[in-house]
Image 1 (cartoon, helix red, strand yellow):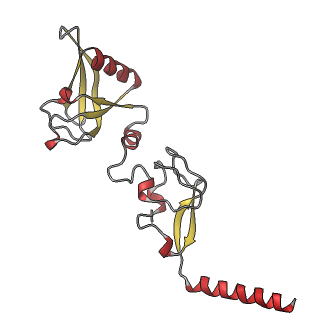
Image 2 (tube, helix red, strand yellow):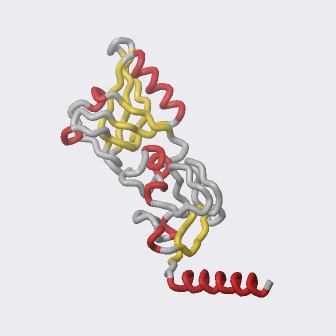
Image 3 (cartoon, one colour):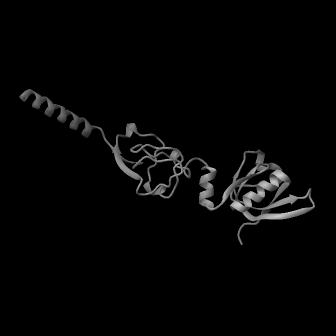
Length: 192
């Protein structure tokens, strides 16, 4: 019995010695299982100490930088939060994350490339979206100053497909115009 107690004590002392010899740093981790789209907050994040050698290089180091942001992929409880897990921190961000930051009540609608033919459109621009109906006999303004959420890759962004934020009703009108007629976009000035 005495030998068992001595062996347990030696094991504990060896474990404590190794633990003290291996440095650990505070790391932001998932406080519970996180699902895509969840908003990160103080209730679902935690800080744990982990050895630096076990950490991913793109781990989030600033707790405040992710509060209020959205998780893009499933993360198990206890796993470190990485920049690639957070929609708004991922290189360029996702369209859904950009839409959420712009106005969460909007829907992302991709306009066909011919809608912006000849215009140099960039993310952050504003567009007036116009439906051409009855084979060009009538025009209808669907949206004014709709925010450009994303621009497809194209040489100098000319003749690129753009994604704009529209209300659900405007999105339906745009879908009708795209499928049953033609849609045009006009670059609007910023502000006012």
